[in-house]
Amino acid sequence: MNDIHKFRRDDEYFMLDVSSGVIHVVDKIIYDIIDEFSKDKYEHIAKNLF
Picture 1 (tube, one colour):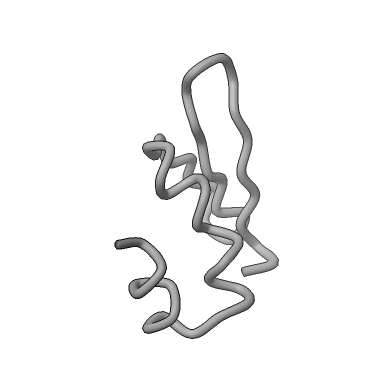
Picture 2 (cartoon, helix red, strand yellow):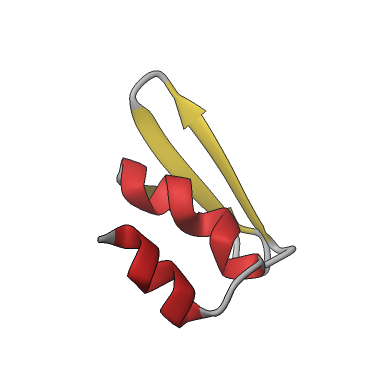
Protein backbone atom coordinates (compact mmCIF):
# COMPACT_ATOMS: atom_id res chain seq x y z
CA MET A 1 0.00 0.00 0.00
CA ASN A 2 2.99 2.31 -0.15
CA ASP A 3 2.08 3.22 -3.70
CA ILE A 4 -1.35 4.56 -2.71
CA HIS A 5 -1.82 8.13 -1.59
CA LYS A 6 -5.07 9.68 -0.51
CA PHE A 7 -6.17 13.27 -0.33
CA ARG A 8 -9.26 15.36 0.11
CA ARG A 9 -10.45 18.61 -1.38
CA ASP A 10 -13.54 20.17 0.16
CA ASP A 11 -16.05 17.29 0.31
CA GLU A 12 -14.40 15.17 -2.39
CA TYR A 13 -12.12 12.24 -1.61
CA PHE A 14 -9.37 10.93 -3.90
CA MET A 15 -6.90 8.06 -4.04
CA LEU A 16 -3.82 8.16 -6.24
CA ASP A 17 -2.34 4.86 -7.41
CA VAL A 18 1.26 5.90 -7.99
CA SER A 19 2.14 2.67 -9.81
CA SER A 20 -0.43 3.22 -12.56
CA GLY A 21 -0.91 6.98 -12.28
CA VAL A 22 -4.67 6.56 -11.88
CA ILE A 23 -6.65 8.90 -9.64
CA HIS A 24 -9.81 7.38 -8.15
CA VAL A 25 -12.69 9.41 -6.76
CA VAL A 26 -13.91 7.52 -3.70
CA ASP A 27 -16.60 7.95 -1.08
CA LYS A 28 -15.85 8.77 2.54
CA ILE A 29 -16.01 5.20 3.84
CA ILE A 30 -13.34 4.04 1.38
CA TYR A 31 -11.25 7.09 2.21
CA ASP A 32 -11.50 6.28 5.92
CA ILE A 33 -10.62 2.58 5.69
CA ILE A 34 -7.89 2.64 3.04
CA ASP A 35 -5.18 2.89 5.72
CA GLU A 36 -6.57 -0.19 7.46
CA PHE A 37 -5.73 -2.39 4.48
CA SER A 38 -2.04 -1.89 5.15
CA LYS A 39 -2.45 -2.80 8.83
CA ASP A 40 -5.06 -5.53 9.19
CA LYS A 41 -6.46 -8.56 7.48
CA TYR A 42 -9.52 -8.11 5.31
CA GLU A 43 -11.78 -10.09 7.66
CA HIS A 44 -11.01 -7.76 10.54
CA ILE A 45 -11.85 -4.72 8.41
CA ALA A 46 -15.13 -6.21 7.25
CA LYS A 47 -16.18 -7.04 10.82
CA ASN A 48 -15.51 -3.47 11.95
CA LEU A 49 -17.51 -1.91 9.11
CA PHE A 50 -20.84 -3.14 10.48
